[in-house]
Amino acid sequence: MIDIHSHVLYGIDDGAQDIEESIEMCHDAYKNGCKTLVLTPHFFDFKHIHGFVKERNHRIENLKIALEEESIPLKLLHGAELFLSDKIFTAGSLDDLTINDSRYMLCEMPLGPFKTDHVLMWFDELLDRGYTPILAHPERYYVFHEDYSLIDEILDRPILLQVNIDSLRGKNGPGPQKMALDMINRKFATLIASDAHDPVFRHTRLNEKLDDLPDELSADDIRLCLEKTPLKVINNQDIL
View 1 (cartoon, rainbow, N blue to C red):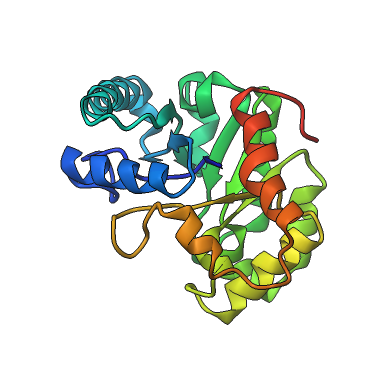
View 2 (cartoon, rainbow, N blue to C red; view 1 turned 90 degrees about the horizontal axis):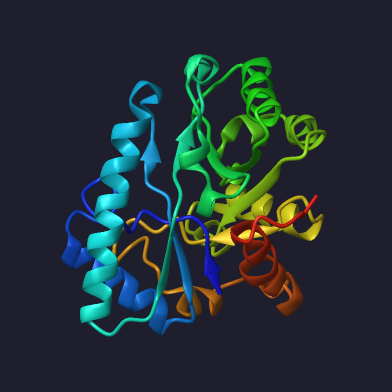
């Protein structure tokens, strides 16, 4: 399995707090069927892209060395989770924030109210720059629960959707679970990820979480969302 959304990288956002915690989460990921983990720390400050990337890459190299010393053969790839806002219009190149230097870019939006036209302009800006946005956890945006048609407006564009495995398990409530299942059943969402933040509550143990998934999800659905589509993302292959 390939986990394309995680906050396992230590000391850079609200995920793992130190390298020991990162190592534990990487160990848990590998022992639970994950062979490739994409490190996607939150990114907000579009004025300081270079500084963020330099610090991220430094910590990734430290973590790779630590995993080698611990004999944990988990493959680590770089990425980021961009918090979209109007600041994107004046930002420099975003190439270093993509997943594994591909065209694919993991993005998130405000969890509270937002203006739909602004969101669509943010996506159009990324598309105009040659990136393919991956919208993280759409089932968690309650604006979509109030007006599901907004998903259709987003999917009129070549945009991918990634749902959180904990949402599918019902850990975020019945509303997000129902929406996440619906989006996978309708092939709106073709990616599942852990969005892991810690070793206990939002952890990286995918096989353990698979045991809790609803029966409606078929083995083919899971393989598509945790293996086939993520592999195309990290290899920069066409999906849409």
